Image 1 (cartoon, rainbow, N blue to C red):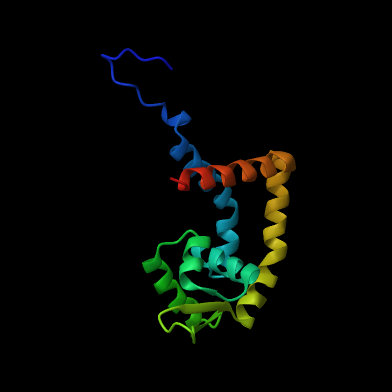
Image 2: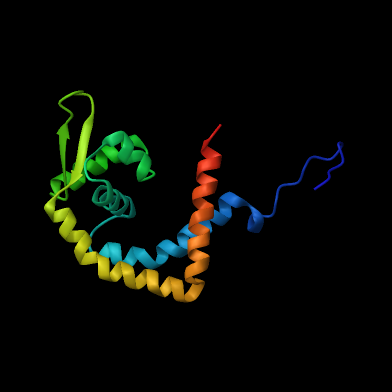
Length: 152
């Protein structure tokens, strides 16, 4: 887009703005999952934490915050809530007492198993609407955007 030096570059329309498009897509997709999560008394953020822990096993809180796309203060409060519900378990790292290690507990794994069929059904419905190949391509592209946008 060639711009005259004397005229400031115009902002893209909100329909073409990447941050807004990403937020709208997130809201559109999460609108399908929120009722399911609410039925199981789990927030979106808690769900991300439980999913990540089920995939990776025991990890430290910093890695958990990064992997679940959470700010550290939010994770600190969430860890307490999930631990109170016995969905996760925490321990101090014996090699470095400053590191908090987090892992999913039996009740958390059981919750994931209970929710799995509903979650898979929602994914299947989205694939019917959007298409499996498009979703896979979008995920790949979004991962690339994340990788390249965070590298400086």
